[in-house]
Length: 113
Image (cartoon, rainbow, N blue to C red; front, side, top):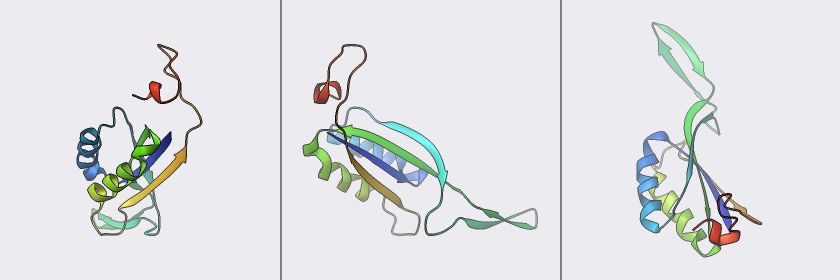
């Protein structure tokens, strides 16, 4: 199993979520996060005063999938989240050793389907 974490621009969430659902990904966790990468935040103007926004709002999507879906999910997220501009985000892939559905005690891939 693999855990895929993607940090994307908030307005791309619906496109990515819809694509993952069509691909057959059954569950996901969505978190509103803030951070910065290469762009180091940005400067905004508010009531005539300039101030620096150090952390940019982002969305983190987490999914746990069967190994054979890894490439499809990564490419789907890339395709749906990409704007071609700085700050599009990152995709991280982790190995998952085990998983357990608390309600039934199912383990492994049976617990994520």
